[in-house]
Image 1 (cartoon, rainbow, N blue to C red):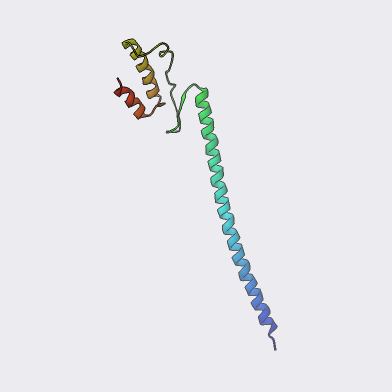
Image 2 (cartoon, rainbow, N blue to C red):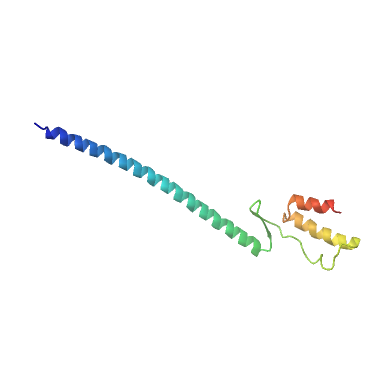
Length: 120
């Protein structure tokens, strides 16, 4: 004779184990999804903050240093270069004043500033 209570108990036990495994997997997937969404939200917030910092920097007439991700002082690049050809010592001083401002504001790399110094 078939022992129905034992079969029914085994089926219920198997169903309970299957339900527990499915719940554990869903909980793991949900926690991974939440972690990824949290990272995405943090990255979006940081991106918005960086964009806002960049805009405020430029609106203030300053120079953005992309390498350091921060705002630098205004590059004192004025009207010195107008008419300067580098043919006279006065022209060279005008060029040098402009380059000093560009290098101080970190617009050029150290290598570019050093190349200007070598060419003198």
